[in-house]
Image (cartoon, rainbow, N blue to C red; front, side):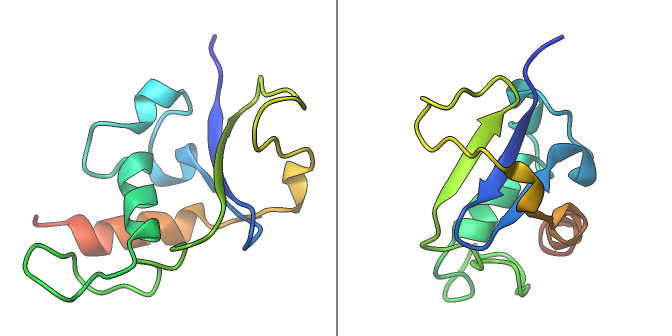
Length: 109
């Protein structure tokens, strides 16, 4: 088996389920390729896209998490872990929107 991870934005009460962006749920399955969870997180957190060469195409989600508190939490997390989120059911799943952001901004690069 293994531990399955999701990304949570504590401030916006949003989350990304890796299956929703065609990634595996294990940490190692979410990094190292163009349409990965790690790429999505990097784009969501960017605070100055569109001001220079090498930036990605404009999209409303790029930078939308800049400055927010974000936690990557596995299903084996325990209450004494830093940033532990106890009630993950209240988070809105934006995975489909994030997948569309990745396709829009990363295709052809």
